[in-house]
Image 1 (cartoon, one colour):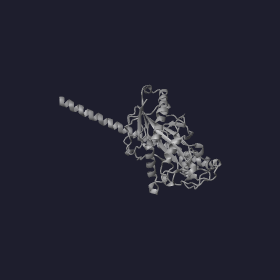
Image 2 (cartoon, helix red, strand yellow):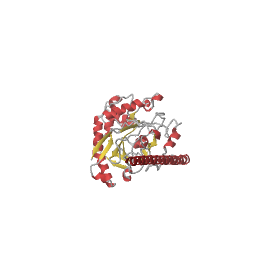
Image 3 (cartoon, rainbow, N blue to C red):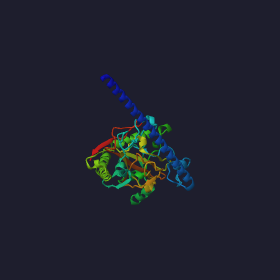
Image 4 (cartoon, helix red, strand yellow):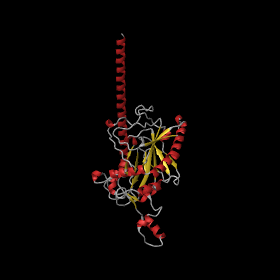
Length: 389
């Protein structure tokens, strides 16, 4: 009788396990159907935006911008494109992603607020809203730090600073000796502007098109990783300015754990992005879940150049899938946080003769973020630093 009871218990356990597996399979199927339905809904909305553009003019839609410019030789302002092909931005990191769900270890979006699929869950809604804060640019001189970093780079691969006509005129007016070499002018302290950094065309073009972007991205990534002065400044900024404010915001959002010591996992080093112009390319609309990022982390974006000079902005949805892209008007000396894992965002083409430079990073929050999880099909080149406050 004991053996029979054990056998019945074993069979009951197997049936229960089979039922659970079937339940998980059904949940996954429903989730995939929901994802496909939402995708078709977004595509339909974007198609309507394109139709509206054709009737009423520019709308800020990324596909419209690409469609309108693919055969143009000049910007809308009549400036010939210097960067006609290739990608929009030289960055210090590169994701590698297989987009098929079959290649993913888990869906990066949690099944529910219990975080049952990835041990993660959404951050509180108030925390996911865009939030802009100011910081002291004298205390956190990222512009100067990046100028110094770029001056130490291979000019043929990453680029060099050039003097614009207004700089030459200003310098000549102050120069009692008249004409001097541009190299000597450029060597003077304070004469370097990130807006005037020029990237070689080949460094925005892929190897298969006789370019060297893969080599340039790895070189720039190694430079950022090894710049101890920059990383010291960045650590100070995150740990003294960003994380205390984030913890305070969590308390205001009603997160009980935030009233006790809480652990943050911030991306270190941050990603440096350099977008020269005049160029055709843009950064397409995407959410970071496509690249394996979780819903338990926030994006932080810091522009280091003047948006009024380059005409480039970060464009974001106000909420996931809303399609209401709007420019996030952030200036140097400000940083914006937003939920990039769920809200799609993009960067418009740089039609100016200047360069847009920015830094961005992500912060994962204990209880919402799983530091051990990684999507299969991605190469994660974002290391994290763990800090408890």
